[in-house]
Amino acid sequence: MLVAYMRAEEEKVTSEGLHKSEVVAWYLEQIGDQIENEEELLERKTVVEKVIERLIYHV
Image (tube, rainbow, N blue to C red; front, side):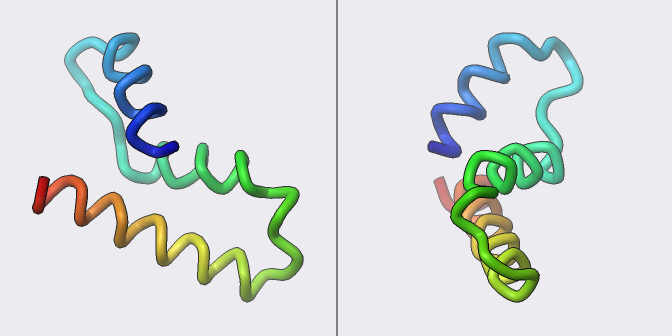
């Protein structure tokens, strides 16, 4: 889901690129109806940030 979004946005964005915070915010919006409390929100945010870091530095 993240990779598909980032690839689609890369085609739209010119020289600036994507910011990690924009991708995290987009992801959290997409799964917002699945999140039941603030603790779960913070947990999901942490996980998606780690996934993005992994994609940036290890792929």
